[in-house]
Length: 308
Length: 297
Image (cartoon, rainbow over all chains, first blue to last red; front, side, top):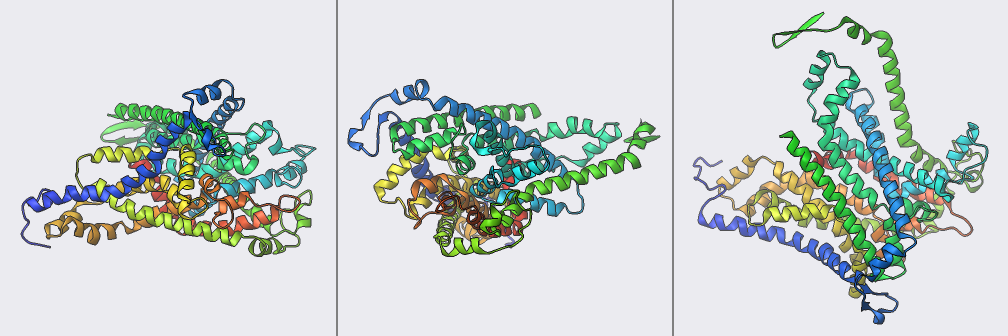
């Protein structure tokens, strides 16, 4: 370590060092920025442009500008769009609520120190570690009507008499898909909430206890308010991801029987090479995501200002 | 009973103290442990069931009611997956794509993250805001233009045709986490290095990046797992098994007359066991990495 501390040589420094940092900053940031713009932003703009055209990849010569016609058809005449949106919103609401509540339960349990806690945390990471497609297939096998273990157990317990064909009817496939997604994603929520729980100092609970608060009261008046920022962040991520759900549904039902999410519809129209129309759906999804993000940012902003 | 906190006297009702003892407490203990057991079964049963199913021959697999433990275990499903199907090649494809994507994101992302966290330059907060916004970018929204582009480059069904699009989510994510990490490093180490006469570049290579190695391992792991896991782009940009990755391969697993559940479960176990082992070995890091953005950022 040098004995003589050159005044201001750390941040401001000599002329040579004053130029270097800023230039270095641009150089270091440029590759990442360039790649992101090329891989994400340019296609995004292109997508907007495609959505205003009639553009089929199996007849590219017939491509022509149609303005908002794709959107018009999408909103007023497409028989799949609104049911898909409805299903996507139902799925999003159900999974986010269930995963937040269950995640909270998991987090509260893990927050206590008890023998075997490490084992429990390891067990919780298993659903997270398994790729979504694989867990969807695993659960599909469990939901199978003839040989599935869920029907097997339900029948053995005499809760049902004839096997339920879970994945064939909307009334049963929707809950089945939701349960599968809850299994897969709750650990992630639990971890985020646990991190938030761990930032709450113990003295507050002490003080509450001495003031005579019961466990429930302490939870409502100490835990929940202080957990709100972490909960909001977890909710943002989960809601955005749930709205774009694809993997778990595609691997279980391919989006059939009333379980088609808007992302699956987007994929299917791409698969038909109807690029223009599919791009319009993509734009709608993008705007919805933007809207949901904006809502949450607003909520986060109010949360932050109310704490000052 | 009374107790004092900072000079003031608090009277704690005796009844409340009593309620915390014996009877109520044992009941709560049992309830707690019951909950722990239920939660653990909930987490582990599907995986257990996949393993059990993968070891059952066709006869036992399609038996109703299903047996909780294989009566006559067999390795025929694993045989099928490993030798009669291109599955091992699918695994290799996943390894290649995930590894290259991870390394590329780390390389580019570390430099970017360091600059965003530590170097003051004009437009820095703009770039940071931009990166944060792209983290929430809906990846499905660009499959059409990306597909058209990849087609024009002749990159459909190639490794680069998958690695490129994967950068859409791995790069912003890596930059974001690395920026958070570098921001939290103590300034003294960096300042000491600069005071000692090192240039910024030397400081970066000799001091900051070595310090960032644990974070890079964590972020690399998270990236690797999410690349491995990815389905939509894998379905979009690959056409046959020469480049197809594991998730897409699982979708296309088919049998002659019916769904080959035994083989699907065997393939699932083969892929899942190393992943679970990886996650369990690194679970401390992974948990820290997943929560770093939410609590600090």
